[in-house]
Amino acid sequence: MIKFICTESEQQAGIRAAEIMAEVIKTRPNALIGLATGSTPLNMYAELVRKCSIGEISFKDVTTVNLDEYVGLTPDHEQSYYWFMWKNLFSHIDIEPENTHLPTGASPDPEKECINYDRLLDRLGSVDIQLLGIGHNGHIAFNEPDSHFPKDTTLVKLSDSTIEANSRFFDSKADVPSQAISMGIGRILRAKSILLLATGQGKADILEKALFGKITPTVPASILQFYQGELTVVTDKSAFSTIKEKHPRVNPE
Ligand code: F6R
Image (cartoon, rainbow, N blue to C red; front, side):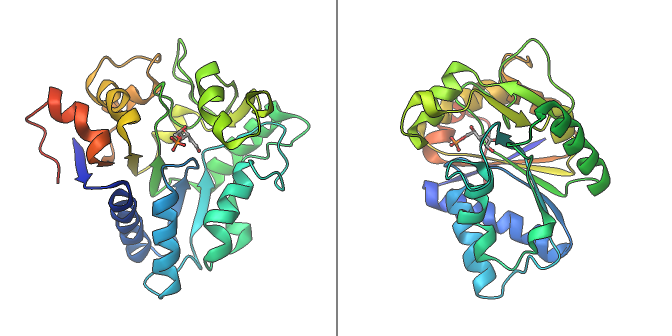
């Protein structure tokens, strides 16, 4: 069963998501946490930083593992996900750098890096809570619409719509890397719990399609309907609007 939490604003959605993360960390101080990048989790990260700064939570014994990284970007590239994580979260909290993990996008052999990342995931064990965003095309991590659901970490060719969507962070569309290393969907579904965060009107239709439509690899997030763990979907009013309209019986918290 999916638990829906619909908040008044994007900021409130971030705060609520941070509360859920914080609960996991308080219950399990050495939790393994799966993280995502993008615009959506920024408020959540800001709130986690705040909670850590006032001593409500500590990341001292927490380990993190990120979903994805662009191929070809070095950690010091401002659009790399490594840079994003340090800028928005890691450098402001008490986490041990060696406990943070992202795929190495600048690896000379990205295929091998995928295998290495899966080995790391095997070593780390089950993720306690995996944060996910959703792409406008229904992708989760960088698992793009396809003919199958990738199980393991793979080298992904980014779809044109994803390159277009992410070009807002780069000087031009041509600067957006065409490939990424992405945790596979099979790996994502191994998490004990999943927190899907979606905000803004632009996510309303795809969120409804993913969670109530046909389960198909052309909408990668639709596989979440088969997820056996605890799935919490946190939204603002705008992102929840299509679900509200088409499924009036869904009663969010
Ligand atoms: C990023 C990731 C992506 C994003 C998705 C939404 O690590 O895994 O799947 O979650 O592209 O991005 P935003 O939040 O920018 O709309």
